[in-house]
Length: 278
Image (cartoon, rainbow, N blue to C red):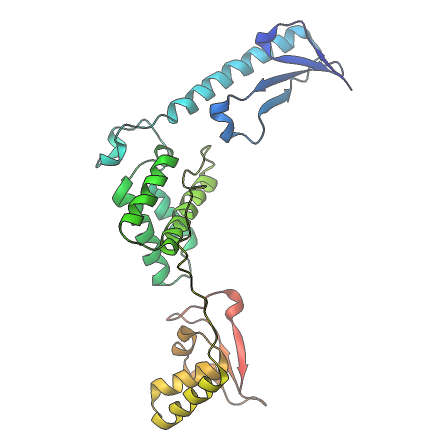
């Protein structure tokens, strides 16, 4: 089918395709990040020029109002990072970073250990310390770049800064997706340089492992037996330390260790639950 422009006038943003009228409007460049395509095309489901004109005028009015609202929200509050309570000054009704953090911990923190909560709170704490508590749409990419530079001035390594930004992006992304917010995460796409500090980790040689086990036998105390257990099984340290008596199964044809989660110690992943044969 071919498209045929109508004689309703350019202000109606309509064209005809197969006899049916369509509404077509290009998205303004400053709002392009809110849409997956640069143009809005929607069927008006009518063959009548009069009805199409009325429908297109209604759609245009609604779009203009919505776009104006988005445009106003994009305005940054001058010196917002200096305010102690942005909520009293901002026109935004979007969740702030503290609300996003609470939601993230509530949804993602189930079954996680204290380290997860401490790390997440610490990384978001850097953002709050430098940029303050703001609604999510009042942070900008320029703010994100300044935060990166501020972290570098505190002599944090590149890998640490990347982990901090990873947490910030995850917290904001979850809030955006859960609440259907029509905003872009300003902390995505920020350049985080590598400092060349990454070091290659080499495995312990078989000779040294054998020597380590021999030392464990000679000293013969709880800590050395724990080290020997980790060497023989390949368990993580927390997994070995968190074992209880019932995890040791002796009444089987082949004795084994049943590695499972406990209230005092969770496992890193669901696949971490496993059995070790003796």
